Image (tube, rainbow, N blue to C red):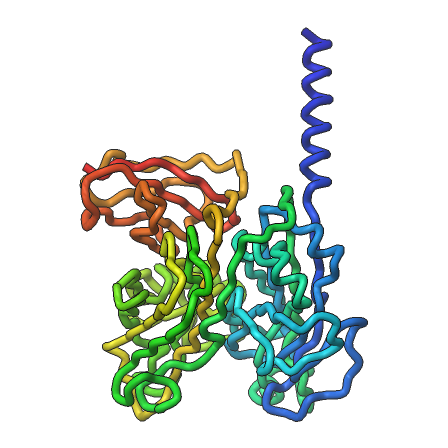
Length: 448
């Protein structure tokens, strides 16, 4: 028995070591310093192989070795450290497809997709914590990084973008007088597993951070309405396709769109595919990062109902990446549409930056291997259910996604441990639960 235990222990240690070795971390930017987004581009030195396009935008080409290391599990982390901007600002991570061998590029002249968006907290650099982490499960992006039709024609550059201004901190934060540096930013990819080079992926960038509103003729289909339609062509039949969508509502003026939750309606070829209302259940988990006093968090904790009455996003949190599974898509002309009919844009102010791209397969399905995690003990009840399904677990729930037996996404809910299935037809469904620590569980659910 003792010998068997020793052999088992050795096997477990070997397995654990193999698992650890399988993890690869790619640090794209390490505490790179951003400057006043409104000012002329600074001339401070940058790390080797890094380009400063603007004070708010850095880029670095992913090397062949880094691309070869990408496995079928891919996590992205952004870490922002406070400097001399103490307000909530918007930032994002992008991939740029740059002609092979180019040593630089103009961002507006190449294809780019946004793969993550975040909002900084109100941070005083002299108080702790002075950093905030953001994490994304971007398994779908791994397929793009291993796609030979992309890498044969383009170099893939990763971009970290963070717009900040130091003007308030110059007066309010000790040590910031006269300075124009605003934040430090770190971008990391962590990958594991094995993914061979592929040749069946299709990427169609549709919209990159282009604003949507109802008062600018370049930002809407029809002035007076908050709508955008994007027509595009698919060259080959796709056996499976998904839209990846990022939106956030901005406008801090009186009655502005930052403070009003609106229903968003998403269409593909004129058929409604998704309805959602931005905003988390609560922003309280991110209060600890907001070390600078501000009117969003106030002095005391707010109830969930209060947060839901005005908050479209949380300073210190990610903006969700919404996935709209389309199934097979035939070659030919298609359209993407977004409508926010109740948006007001008081005083002709405010904007919704919209990013969306279509990713598909000419063979097979766009399956993303789930990140294994055996430490999550979750219960779903009642199951079967007539309506509300509740998840109990030690980890907080980040997203619940429900699929029918055909693999089509039929419902999603963010930052809640409950989802109401009463609108679904009776039958069997699959529920994918993404937790805050990026662990994922998939469970079968029966709707009575």
